[in-house]
Image (tube, rainbow, N blue to C red; front, side, top):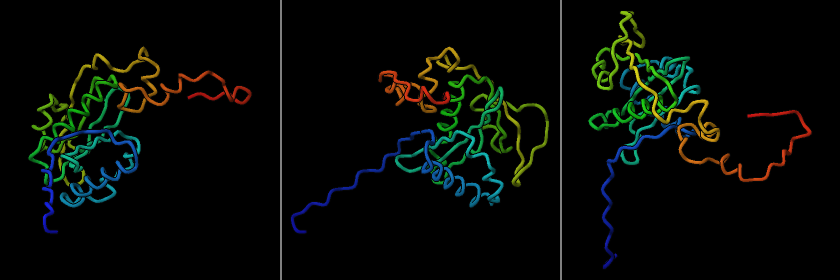
Length: 206
């Protein structure tokens, strides 16, 4: 290879980005991160970590550069959202990916119009959640599972000015979850003429 210069590798980006999981590949990333943290490090039994709630939740994935570094899960109840299963791979715990994951989830919950976020924090991490304004719930209920003691936490929030309500643009409401500000495929389909191809069949709605 005389006379050929080998290009230098570009330095690895350390930029932190957060996105919502959207497909099975994303859920594989979530599973890998939580397995590394909870199963490998904390010796949590598989059936306790993968508890049957992953398919009924929103999942956030945090990246440091191109590497999946952490994840977080959000579930929704009548008047509150529950933020849970925050996991960050040990190599990235000195980064701010955990803070950015939580902030992204809080912004998301505000956009959905909720006013309360509930969590169950390992006792040693109460101060971390207090950074976001969460406070111990005050029930003084003892919670232990998977060999750790937990404190119930509550964060009271105000919905964002752009929170989605029944008054929101109907096309916004049907856009992909978490991607409400960008026109989706159904926005584009609205430009086609109305033909009602199933008008002679049973009524169907979305």
